[in-house]
Length: 430
Image 1 (cartoon, helix red, strand yellow):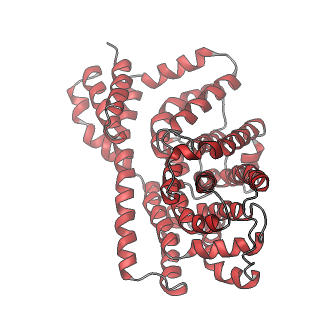
Image 2: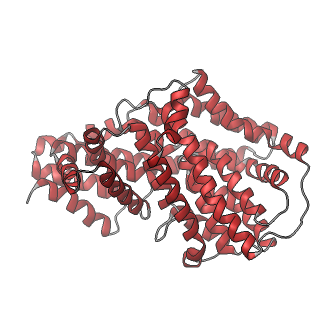
Image 3: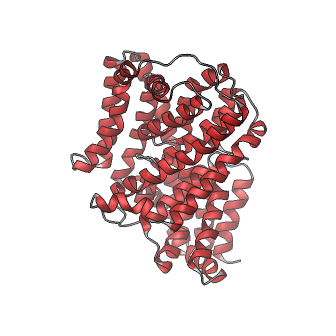
């Protein structure tokens, strides 16, 4: 049996058996190396595991996770909802649009779809229920709009992509994700507004908060993306330093400006962020073994050649790759998809001459769709639980945002400048 079959076969068997994704990645890599190479290579597994996470840019991941949790606890989401309601006003589908706007802004703080979904759903769903929005509809719209967090900078998935793909400027990736992220938000907003008007959702006039007062109350939260992106653009700090600054700013907001956090809250967010970060780092470290095995045994090159042999058309190959990533996004989290797929996709990118920044954004858009597409749909699981509805009940509503976001992916494929214009204007290497 070839080492290629051993690596991929053992990975899927271990994964199907119910083992965590990190165990499947690490163990399948060790098995393949044991049978395909020698014991000396197996003895180097500890070095490979450590080298996978001993990278300075990776420090940004736990820091941005902590940033998102601090802003979630500090009451920023509630103030952003108030501001959005003041801007949108009472109208058919108004609260659905408010939820989408808040998700887009919160995505610029957390970089995580599930965290974004949890923060916004907790605040928005009770209000949406009062205005006649069905629970399943509310859960679907928030889950779909929260998926834009993987595109709106700072995106944890794009950080992983920049580390795995040599020569990619993370600042260029962040800039490239902004307009596609806004396009994805628009793609969710259109069906949400059309359905709301057709079904009569959100017709209750509950008053409109004063715009000036709401804007002042929301200013600390609005400044967070400005500080992060402005600091990166000015060169004042690196992405990793930006994450540290964001944490410090979030603590100032929670402790002194909003005064909504105490020492107990700080302890809780530190503990929860550490738990989530540990899971992510374990996945990344053990994925290093899988990547090492696939590279040294030639498995990824062989798989890439097989995909390229399907068609001579780069567009057909691209559509096939996008479909595979979308399917993977339905059952796996974004970080795992990047770790598993990129070693395979990098040879294809090189062969077909795809722009690495553009392709990274396309990957993120497909992973975003997978985050609210059943059966797993991590974002939808979070919002459905908060809305107290089964995921099955969301199917009739979530289908429309899925179709709309697939169309937005097609637009970025057809017009790469949607992603590449901003980083080009800002002078980043694309």
